[in-house]
Image (cartoon, rainbow, N blue to C red):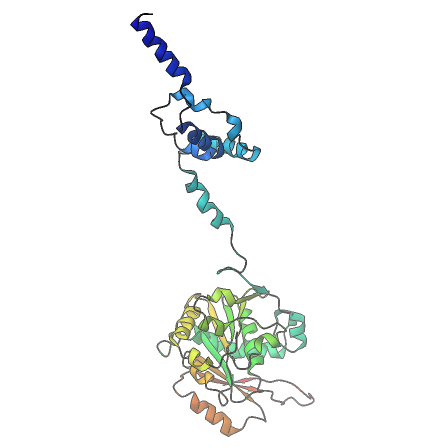
Amino acid sequence: MSIIEKAASRIDHTRNTAPAPAPVETDEQVVALNPHAAAAQPAPSAPLAPAPAIHAVPLETFAPSPAESAAAAVAAGAADAAPVRHPSIHAAPAQPRTARAPGGKHSARKVDLDLARMRDAGMVTAASGRTSLLEDFRVIKRPLLKRAFGEASMPGRPNNLIMVTSSLPGEGKTYCAINLAMSIAMELDHTVLLVDADVARPSVLRTLGLPAQRGLMDILIDDKLDLSDVMLRTNVDTLSILPAGTSTPRATELLASSTMTNLVTEIANRYPDRVVIFDSPPLLLTSESRVLASHMGQIVMVVEAQATTQHAVKESLRQLEGCSNVNLIYNKARDIPGIEETYDYHYG
């Protein structure tokens, strides 16, 4: 055998006995198990392996499942319609956009007021017809609304923030606050937020037949809470409610805090047509009402006829010195002959 024949025989023997190249398994696995990656980027070249060798590995070892095959088909169609990108760019953002936890930061909560029950309890409702009570609160609200959107008498005290209070418990301040809010909610150009700020003895939700909820105090304590997390929308479209929330012994300090100042500024200015009614604690029993009054543009003090003493009224008015818009509602007056129990409201 010549030298040339021996060399050719040696080369043929080397080709027949050479093992399959190592990179083949890695490349084929990427193609079979992650079809998105295959469509997104070309397989790296293997210098030691000829191109046909990539298909020499048995595909049964890396056969994709039916779900993976479907994914590969989708990826192939997407690759024709869109620019080529790495699959993680498409998959990662898609999940958070569609998955929002219930009760998220801007979730809306709605409660239904029992308007028939409110009407039977002697409260103002749109369905109660033209009653003397409705007319009384129309008289009461008109000067309040006139000032609400005028120039503030004192800097930092928007006139659309109205506090309803009394000297002592039981004079009807919550009843008047709810009726005033319901009457203003009947206006065509205004919306109302009713805030239960009597944090020691919350009574707005109880009077309306609603269970206790998180509210004002929770916002002041937890800076992660937003107003929308605790505000309640009602079936009266123009009326919302902010409950008192969790009771706390630090209520006075919280109401006097910069957080409270920021909150009342926000609720006063967020909507240009909004009137905010605060049901406040009695003036002569707590310090919260005096602190709350320092944020208000207008004060309405309820006086119970034939019950509240002149001394109590004078002392309450003395505590409101510095508040320029103080108004009185004379409540539970019996001045109509022949009627055993009636309510007459005098504004002054």
